[in-house]
Image 1 (cartoon, helix red, strand yellow):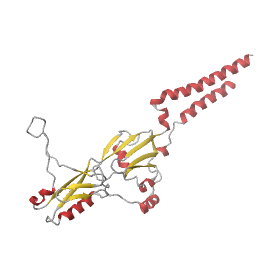
Image 2: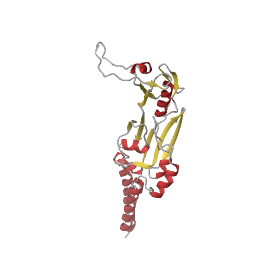
Image 3: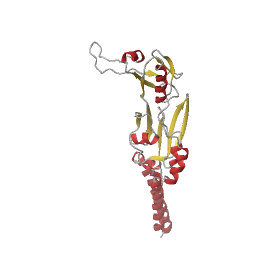
Image 4: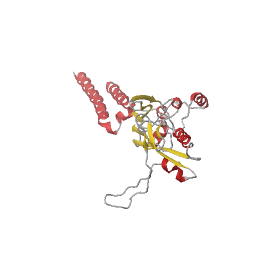
Length: 269
């Protein structure tokens, strides 16, 4: 009877160690509270973002065109080509030069001079430049593109790394999808987003299980944001930590063996 009780205790100890690494389906499910009622509550406060806000350090291409192409030549940066040292023929197709937004939030635009672009969206810069050009050019057309924008995704995702932003805006769900989604070890309730604003760091933790993330100011990411997915308890007993897990099980088993030995000796005496 004593041996049976000790065996049960041993089994309970092993199961207790194993259960600490279990993850429920609810913990793995995204937006588990989403339904029609929740959607109405979210939409009451939802503020969709069309595009990212331009910041100091961003790179912009700005191309001006019009029916009279000669009239807009002074307003476009010259195209550049590259050749290998010692060679005359270019090795690449011509590419547009770009503007770097300085610390004050300005760019130096040909003829027009300094333009304050920080804090504006791409379409707002297009409208501003077009308005300035209309004083000198008939029916100008302006195309602005934010180049090199990216966010970084780290932690428990399938493909951590930098995600380029090509559509003008990106949500935290977009970034995680581009990174191959969370691994089984990633915590859906603890996704950290860090962001630099005016030289200071801001951070927020998002719960992907709740539809409330749609109303977070960090749902729409900004350029250079960093998304970090924390590991869950299963990681503690994953293959990388198997030695620790087996050590714990071995300790429980050893303790049980000692108890059995002591009890057997006591009975004999």
